[in-house]
Image (cartoon, rainbow, N blue to C red; front, side, top):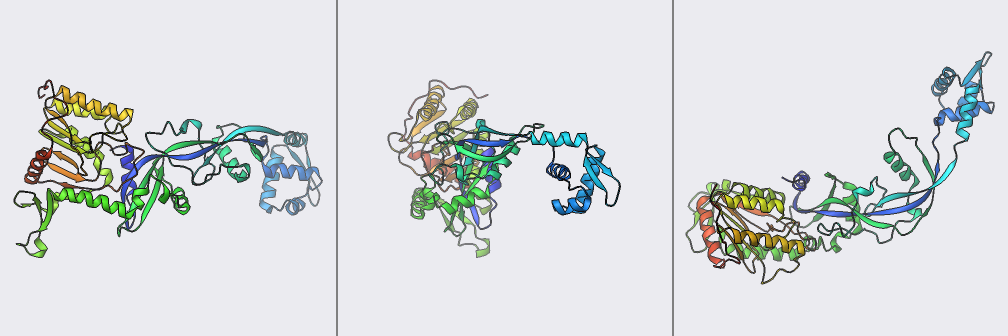
Length: 469
């Protein structure tokens, strides 16, 4: 299971909600070049410095220091004891005891007074959703072009950060977090100006769509570095931009979701539908899986289970690695994000084992939205189909069905695009869910039904067949 799938599975723990979609995304971050005024680091702590200054001004007894500095007696006595031990102050007898600065104490004060102010240009990073400063390194950020295969989210507010929008306390917290170990700390005392136009960059994250069990509510969540960010989720929801985003449009459009689900269901009903077994008592009834043109096939409920969206990618990888006799994949789109070098290697190994593989794809005669990397991925499959007689690559035509079938072990019918999931940033997130059936008779009947509807001639013909290893 990949990192994204593991994160998605961990996120799927919400009461009254289930995870229906997820993908990698770029979250917006503004790089703001600022001119700031810094106060140099001092050797003295704040209490130590104020106490030495007070003694230099003649506030020299314990009671007077307590009253003047507003500090508890224990703090004053403890600090005076430390200064006396370090030979920075000297005590003189009497009632009350009074303190004076030594040569060492005067030196420390002089050093503190010599710490000056400097102006410096520094980069600050402002989160495009929360509008808070974030501790980031330039190497952790990407341009929109670099993240084009992933897709990026725009900032929730169009206006770029200004100097007045940046909190000095946050700046100093960021400076502390980013400071090198052992280096003297500097304090930002003033943010003078923002220089030039802020640069919009992006950091990799994951976004996940949840739907309530009653089907009425959609929630968008974010995970950064594998950890969920409630702050991003709350602010993004309050902004109201999710419903307007092309990435989430389908999730928030209940009518469109319903039409897509119904379209898939209509196509699947051409092959299968579940009926009740009326020969048994209600408590013992099991669903019957009926395939078109065949008699009813009884499938126990223990052999049918619902798959979450994150269950699909590892299932596809497992199918390529474990199939022994046949493998059928039906998926409308082929995208490079899925059909990559690792996929081609697994598929080649599968073909080397002598597995009969059929990949059916396509909606219509061409592939709208296909980019150069996607074309190369499709051509890689075509090259394998030329090399192996046991690999059949066919253009299915207009279909909403997505199927994975392995040997006579199981088949999956789903809305999940096996060969393109997360592979097209121009496509919005969709509700994804599948059903896995583990029943040899049902698998064989479904395979026969599907293959009968595929074009007889493959797109390319194999020239040779490698022997079974």
